[in-house]
Image (cartoon, rainbow, N blue to C red; front, side, top):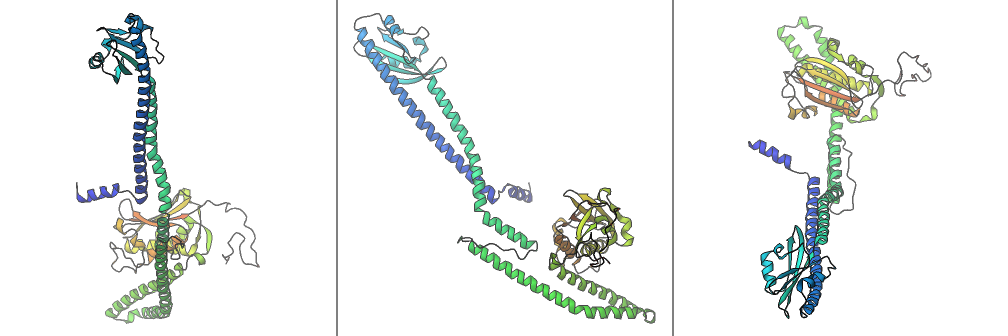
Length: 490
């Protein structure tokens, strides 16, 4: 077994904090239950045995006194033993004149263990538990000193054994139930004890997903208040830093738009006189044009990032046919690669059309420039209900450990085939746009090789048929009655 395999097994077997709390409560409950069960068993059984032995000894002693008194009159022993009553269901035996006499025809001296018989015949006073004919019995021996004999009375213990079995079953059931109750108590205690940790995890997750306004509520707990204060200070500092970087990027992007526009116009002007340039001049013009185009795309992406970071306040949402949106967003040359599932045809999504078109454009351009070429764009329904838009390429794919990193800003794929990769904002923009629409964007392996970028958005079927006569347009407001108030009909 390799070291990696062993370490993986160790990680699998490690319980989480909640699991360890529940397990600890269960083990403690089991230990307490077992301890109490053993103590109760020992206490009750000893108490019952002592009480039974005391009562049996008192009854046997009283009977022995009567037998000794009768034997002084030389009455026949057999008749004497048979005449004794058995109020407790006991059986009597008498050792007299070197002979055993039994008061019950089903019992003889041969049924008793030989060591016990020898002790009785020696005149020893005793109490001993034995098994006779498969049932527990208590033998009480009382020496008859005046007549040189021994009286033995045998008491049944069946009722006591039944009581002990009931007690044992009850204690075992309690012992088995105790760990389950311990697990439930541990789960409850774990939730209460770890609630602050859960809140920290929630807030940290919100910050990691982009919500820099997430904070922990102040608490009066002296142990937790410093944690909450430190977390809030850190989140506030991060928020200020990000806002500062955003303002810087926005300001720089706006300042660059004018010189970039000038450069683009200059390149266009020089391109009209391309034939007048020598070979080296043309190459220089082409290189300059490529770099200016790339620079222009960077400025546009930075401006788009700044608008996206503003949040969902500027979203212009409208219901749009998902398949038609994709069809209009991809280049004309790529429409032959579009595959729309019949079940997805007609599904509506409530989106900001400009942002979603930019998302799909970014994904298709990423496939062409960095993924070895676009091979398929699909639209299909998914549970939820949601609609999935998938963009597939023929590149080397994205390794599993990079599938989250590729959506970070300024991240460039290490497996890209493009010799002049972009600035790393396209996928970050796409992810941000999808997140604002409460959707998901992820990358997975494509069957046959390559990467498959999937956009998942909430969707629903149309509530009316398109063939219905549309309501009239209100000329005073220039809005269609079916449109949201922020969508202007042109």
